[in-house]
Image (cartoon, rainbow, N blue to C red; front, side, top):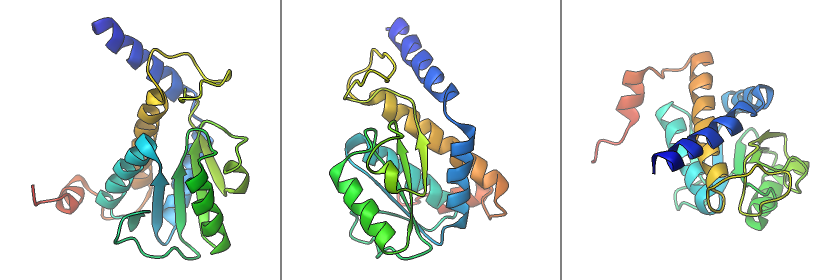
Length: 185
């Protein structure tokens, strides 16, 4: 078991080392400039998106998850952060297209720089990890399906929030973030 844990950790470290700092900074800039942030992904990518949205909320950002009943309409000056390993998920393409039509910015987190969704976005963050498709350009992994992508997305987006909060003059001290954390548990 220890060997498997070490292999997974090494795989993720290799992926994280290849993430473009410029792309991460570009996403951070979009987060700071957005009036409101909307997040969407399907399946496990959607779960990583919800974790990202939660931490953004803790950081004091106005953030919504698409598909929740309390999510308002998206407008100009808003940002949609879409998460799709393949960059071709149908529902995400639909939401990205509609968001652009309404004047919002769209930022894609993906493995596929040349995807359909990427072609209409204001920015992309490439996570060079394996997905369930196992395209020739994807790294080898012992992990099933899109585990490597999802784990890497979670860590990279958390790091981007940390960096964004360090550069943002927000009320985002540890104490303030703790106050925003749920207290109904």
